[in-house]
Length: 284
Image (cartoon, rainbow, N blue to C red; front, top):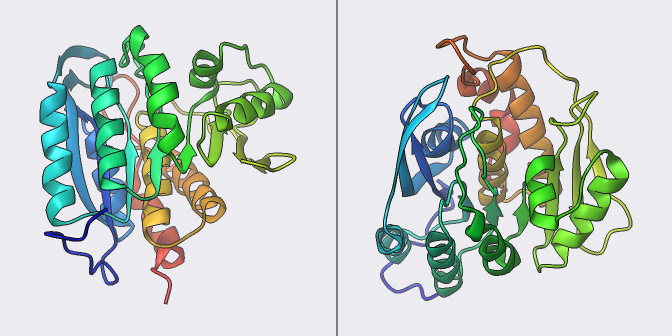
């Protein structure tokens, strides 16, 4: 990346970019990402891919932006401000996936976290079927870490996942795309909510153990998880350190989830932040 026209003095305020859809209910997407960045002391910027009309019950409508508009947003912030890390969420179409991948390469975006958002908590599809292969072949190779849940990992690999051995196999396969690490979230499996971080070249995955919390208020957990990962990387933490921070943050956010609406309520970013903020200070 050229430094011409951009501010590279981020030492006192790390900067992160989220490329994702807007959630009018505020629990997921761009809104969840920016809340996460803010409470963790990272300056957040956004490139919106789609505008959704949604609440805790349903996604009532989706307006996908032209790929050129997404590119223009990325170019605007990268040419002037730059970033220390970035993450992707809802990308909606193959055209947007391709545009984002091209912009990430052109600007040499550092510390990219790819959250392959495919389906909303309400069941609404957020990624076109023909975009999955583009995501796999064009964007995943650019990522420092990819954060699918087990259902998304099944789509990306074409293999069923029913336990830890399947997760390790899927993570290894996804690392073969070129990404440096894969973190597969196990919340959709039976039992405890263990997550698995596999870094390319390792013999085994690191297990991030978690106990299942009985609540329906889990809207935006995946977005928040990947946003904490991106924030941690922006602040100078390693992938493993950022993964642990994300696990602890989301667990606390679910435990203190907000009972808003009549469906899947949002997690509580503010409640999670105080316990972790000291651990996310930039490296001296």
